[in-house]
Amino acid sequence: MLSTGHDDVISSLPDAVLCHILSFLETKEVVATSVLSKRWTRLWDSVPLLNFFAELSDREASFRFNEFVYSVLLALKTSIKRCTFDILYDNYHLAHLGFPNVIKWINAVVQCGVERLYIYIESYDNIFKLPISILSCKTLVVLDISTLTAKGFSSVRLPSLKILRLNETNFLNVQDLLLLLAGCPILEELLALHLEFDSDDSLTYQELESLSLNKLRIANLAGTICHFPLKALHNVELLDIEINKVYRSFDDISTFHNLTNLRLYSNNCNMNLLVKVLKHCPNLQNVELKQCHWDGRRCYGKLGGSNICSAVSFITT
Image 1 (cartoon, helix red, strand yellow):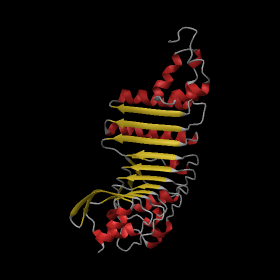
Image 2 (cartoon, one colour):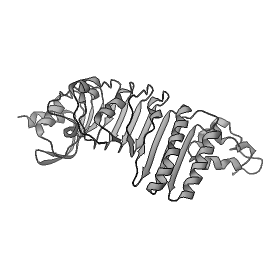
Image 3 (cartoon, helix red, strand yellow):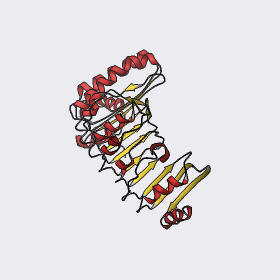
């Protein structure tokens, strides 16, 4: 039976329960609940999860959205557990006007001790630059960014970061990517998809040896073309990689003692490299070849268990 009048079961729930329910909604909808009754008037500003979504096609819409976000951030009475900014600017002019506001919002949630931050800022002809304040956020546990540029930083300190997801992110060079990773000492999961670099300089021996990601368990570098130190991935259990795009012939391949699941992508790679990789994975249980051409032949499918050893034995004899 639906409750009506004074028999309002939902409103009688504890604040903590109501805030948890509201956390699944977009922030605009959460704020709208304040008109339901006095019980709800100030409840929304205690919700520790913020979700801002917008597709902005004109200046008036952009102004209203800016005003709304500022009002929410100024009214908050609690630390922020999770915050999402998913904003599409329809043209360069709107993006140019909007980006400074987004930077202020991100700086504000960083100061509020945000733990999980998701940033998807998109414009058809302008690229949003990652605010430097994020790179020294001591409370950040999850950072998920897409279609941004990460440049102009000289130090990174993210002592609590466990999950880093980078999608279509632009760096000045691969050294900047390594600097970012080096500042994440307890990183457990890395997703680096389709990264772009202004410079394709190879790494020096010292740079190859310096990066250590001992806590890393999951790594996905699919679609990323750069010289990446495979040694830094030696502790991973799950690995997705386009091996011929990150490996250089003079690199050493460390033994992946913990690796059980490997997904290889390659459009042009020799069979010897495949064998070399597999021989350094003594505990591998599953191998999946995706979009692969080995020695001019298209390969695809999955290998598991003893089939891996058989495949290595077959292609080396």
